Length: 304
Image 1 (tube, one colour):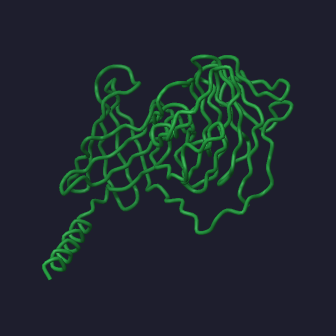
Image 2 (cartoon, rainbow, N blue to C red):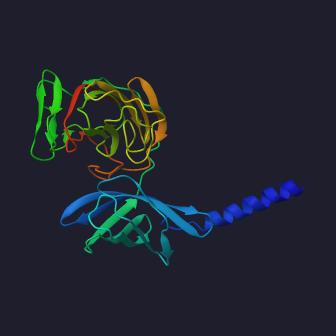
């Protein structure tokens, strides 16, 4: 009888806490405007214990950053995070308000300048049925047909190999995709770095990492969010492969024939995302601003 009473009290107590859920809690797709540039960002806020809110934040670059405390009072919130790759040593400070499923506010950058942002609740992207796969599509042909650079182009196709011999613009497909299976082979010189952005928003990291421990921001990770279960990178200069399946938010990454991420949910956009419109289709984006990289045999099989 005592155990039953304790169980009932636990349910009642948990229900009381649930009723106190703050409107700021959850995941938010943000759009920040800084120096006339539109910068996609992302915010997650959750309850820690009874009275404290904590979270994670993704800026226009870098990895997901922990927020030690999100302050909330009368519909207004604020938090700060230390700089990651930003210049200076002052924190980034965020202040805003929540109205329904909309969020508005400002960010004070490390230089003291203030920029506005808006946000909306991130979609859950849950699928109600398994995908039915369509026909495979070869993304690399004899030239750059079907691709476009997001700046001055340095990419070329030679003998079936899509290559960037120096740091420069990112490259993205003109076609957009929702759910898909992607096979891609790649090769990089020692110390180089790239990434494959799924829907232009979620980076599967490519980095020179043979012999290193698995990390959340290194080879085969979903950058800043999902760490591979083992390190399987080959030596620089060797051809390697990813087989990636993305359905809604759920991703599986097979690196060099080994499943390193198995059907895991991607919380939100990663640094360097093309936009924060997670509910929309998006392109395959190849990172070209972190050193030389080569790709070949890139095949995508979209869901019908």
